Length: 190
Image 1 (spheres, rainbow, N blue to C red):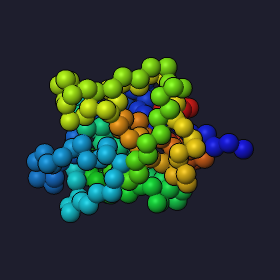
Image 2: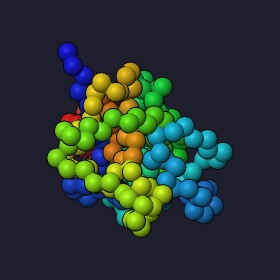
Image 3: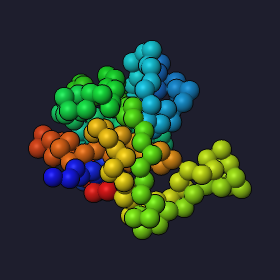
């Protein structure tokens, strides 16, 4: 049976949900690089981070915090990632301000160049003339995302080279997250 893959993004339609801000250090100071959690590479955190609640509401098990879209997961989702994809992710305990329950920052530490440009509905690339010339050749926009599964190998969770917005998970992880009752994640087959 051929493996299936899904983009994992935030379900913005969860009624009454909370909204999280960008992670800070324990004193509430901004961290140097909020984008490091989207690069698909291993990271090293020297201290526990705090995640402020930007707007209060129902806590989510899968969320993407602040402008950096930092993945924050509750214990149910963290258990699934730890048990099924320990080679692909790092989990760091974080304090969500005002929450007694534990949460984790999910860092996906794999990046794979596998967007199938021809199978996508539409792709646009950054050029050297764009506002961010350092991104020339990377994806500016991808509509109807499709991946070339032959390039994935054994990875179960990964980011896409040149297009770091979605987290890609295999079908077994999607099924396990749904079976665990996690709230907040939305899946779309790629």
